[in-house]
Image (cartoon, rainbow, N blue to C red):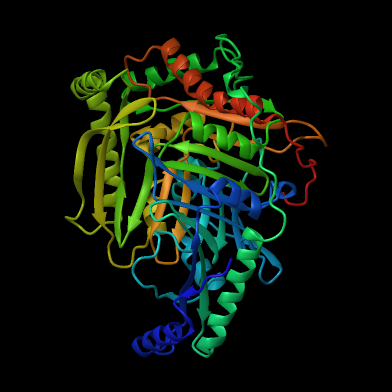
Length: 542
């Protein structure tokens, strides 16, 4: 299959000349897009062609979306073989420049603030793009964990509890080339970018970008397709009964979560905090391939932010309902969710439950508190007077539940970028509490190990300056086997907001229910697809 590029060589050279005329002597970066029919591939099949089974720990990603519980989002994005990675662990920042074949580490006290300079270093050039591109056409994909807040509040929080997994606090991968599915138009877009330093010939830059798309297309469409596990007949119908799921050991030990809730209530009664969000982590083992777990999670718990992220020594598999922060055209937005009801059996019961949710004083009070926290976060980076609510306590309906939802927006101040908006928002009150810093101090006292990716941000930051991240909730951290041929280890983490009248046993059960929803996807993947051959514990891709 062949297709022309947009723009073609002549139009590209004209666009480059016009941009150089407006900003002489400035390095540029221009997108080059190849549009193909998308009816022969799905995002799952395309990902498996780009990332063969033996590379199931190598850096790569698939970002997908289902809105309103059943409507597929317009775009899916996927990529592999990033040209660079940025990895932060405590005070050390590692930059892996795969294009140059180098790796270097240096001290860094705030990696999110280092990201703009690293972008200029690793992918130089001012982005010049026509209208009509997908919202993400190249840039960074990755995560900033809950514990990145320790870079912004070092005195108040310190290093925190130990990290028993040695996971990065932050891990972003750089993709000048990626694949996008446009589900509305039924097309497949191969997106690359041409780096154009001031002294580089435009035709040479265009030719290099086209060669990159040729190679991407060959990996995607050429050669033997990678087998994708398919379920045996009637596999989905086999049920494991109604026994309580075995979630494995808790990071807090038996009865530990109830004890944490009681301690939080003491702090709330003493006036230290209004709300604290403790969590507990469970570990289960599985022979199922992490990518098949993602496929199962997408089926049982579709959400606006579905992601599969291979991040070196771990795989993140998630189905998050909630924006952390989104920046488009210099406007930052967040969308707090708080207050939950199950979906009704029909439209009439849905409406009745929605009305109950809006009228519940506890749910509306908690939601108002979170809205105030989000207003404060965006207010730290927004122009004075620009922060406001575009929606207040609407009811958003998902596949199994409905939530109260509001939207906070503000225009970024001059000189403030999307990375800074993310930096000041981490972590949101949904996963910490209020006031945030004191709530996090209490969490550090109660939780014995670092949270890692849980409660942080997962998403992308584009060359165009926009950013789209979700909260890492309903997220599994999948770790490679400890021994050759051993099982994958899956960490399921869940928490809940604790206030003065919270019941310890009920709060504990809520976390079990949340974790059980993730475990359902693991067990479904086992039933549908069986096991995989995990990479050895010393896989070099890690």
